[in-house]
Length: 415
Image (tube, rainbow, N blue to C red; front, side):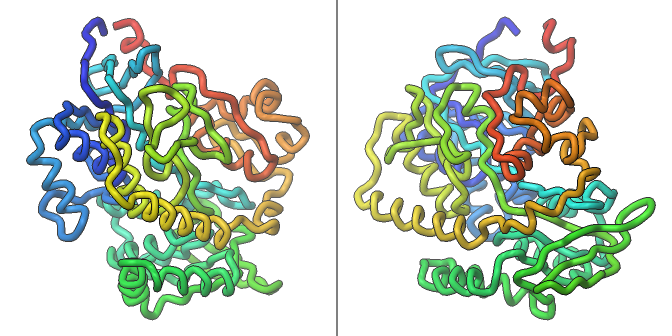
């Protein structure tokens, strides 16, 4: 690993925010390297899209393919960071050290899971995860799927699964009707969002959406066979082949924390130019707070300009305020309800990698104590799944991760 790659701008993450930042910086004359763990650019939102795809995703990917100053390093994930904006990436050719003039963090968000009895059964999967599996070739034709949790992602997943031929039995949304009505009314006043919502609902015609509803347990022997939903104090059990669950998104801040960026409320703190608290490091998209693809692309534009020393365009403050208002409404409309936090029983597993239960963890005072005494967060995911859960259940805040960020082959470390 003696060779050091050098670039003007390193963008970590190839979703809408990262690609917007990369194209902006490149068009300003910078050499840009985009690193992403997925095998192709697009991130989770545009996963599977190509330059020939219709709509915004295809247009952005086509622009990326014809921009000579942008190099995309796919299948590359961060293992650790070093001083002076140096990042070590794990790639198919082993570890590679990259030194950048500026770093733009566009690491997006991860799904938040909330444990309930039966949630570890095969067939109970993340909502976004099941969507990604079907985009990668999993056949769900004719299979019965219940989508449950909270947030706009549920509707997008339900629509996508239906297009793949699944029988979507319904969408259980834990938020109450009044929150959904408020969100819908606001979206209708925003440019483009009303049309997006209308198209989505058209694609879901015939699929019931149950507000004020959440799963209380899943049952099955070899895999999930049924889910019981609670709505207004009444329980209903539905036979199903898949249960896709997701209780919102949380910013993916682990790389930011390794770099020393300030984090508050679970999101990377940035100023109006998308600068973080670390000189030369910028952040854009869901890593700064959950706000959707439009906000991500806008923030990517600002970060790309800032990283090459250019000023934001005229009127950007008003657009930033509009996006911030929408993000705040999202946060309040889909806030996690107390009943969902109370779902795990004492024997319900919280840390799936190390089989640590709610009964073991609720007696601990904080993340460090739990980690020392139960191995919570020490498995293959290194806390990526269970840390957001413990934050929601117990209010814990894990410290900055230690390198390497993910398990790394010994041969790579010795190279």
